[in-house]
Length: 154
Image (cartoon, rainbow, N blue to C red; front, top):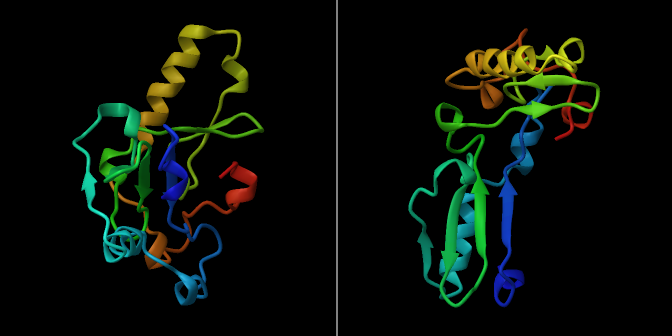
């Protein structure tokens, strides 16, 4: 928070995302980002959740702390599902378009690199594959992304 006191920066934090092989060990160390706002308030600062800023905010909740020139963005994949409002796609280093970090679905962009119209269609296909909710904290078996975040680029 103090890093934004004199800098026009937007700092984002994301909760730990339990992706690939599901275990419950992460729950022992998990910290909801709700605690960030509560901690800032406990230090005597006023914190305001800014109004919707359209597509640029993505899944983040944007906060302005009184007296700070920058903002804080908090992304809550576990404590507050944002899947229905998520407008993000991920392009992996090995050429796959992922609609969601959690689920297995991904589409190869390589066959379409020299075909702009087909590549555009592929992006719309990826958007159509987006689901209303992930199952990170439930440990749904079978369909989760078995690559792991380091191989996806997260």
